[in-house]
Length: 241
Image: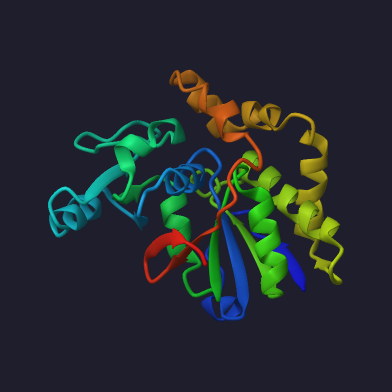
C-alpha cells in the first residue's frame, strides 16, 4: 500500500485515481464542518463551486429540506443560513437537513478528485476513524489537502501527516511512503504536542484571527472526538457504511 499526499491542491490525473482511495482535508474549516455536522444529525452535504449554484440547488429542493452553508473570502455569504464554522452546526439547527456547502477551497477539492475509488472526508475530529478506514480498504492512498487558494497549507498537511502516522502505527501491513508523505509526517511530529501552533502559523489561521474567528482554531484541533467517516459519492457526502 503506497501512501502519498498532494502538497499543492492541483488536480491529479483522473486515471491515476481509479484504484486509489483519497482523503480530502480542509481543516480550517470545510471538512471540519462536514464531519461535525453529520455527527450532529445532518442528512447529507452537497459541495458546490459557486454561490449561484448553491441558490439554484436550494430552489430545486423540497421546501424546508435544505440549508445553505459556507463562506466567500472567509466571510459569511448574504442569504445563506450558516457560515463556515463547525460551532454553528448544532443538532437543533441541522438535524435531518441537507446542507449545500460552498467554500473557497474545500468544496472545490471534492470535485478535483471525484474519480477516486473512494473519497473520504477527514479532519482532526475523526482522524483515527479515517486512518482505520484507510487500512481496511487496503488501496493505495492519496491524502488531498485543499490548500489555501491554490497554495500549500500548514494545517491541512499537519493533519495529513498525523493520519499517515496513525496508519503506520497500525502495523497491519507494509506501507510505502512517498517523499511527500514522509515530509508531512515529519511536519506533524514537529507540532504533535500542540497543533494549534500550526494553525496560528498558517496564512489562513491568521486570517481567521484577524476576522475575530480565533475560537475556531482550538475547536477544529480537537482530535478523535467523532468516529464516523463521511464519503463523497455521486456529488453527495454522506456517512459511510
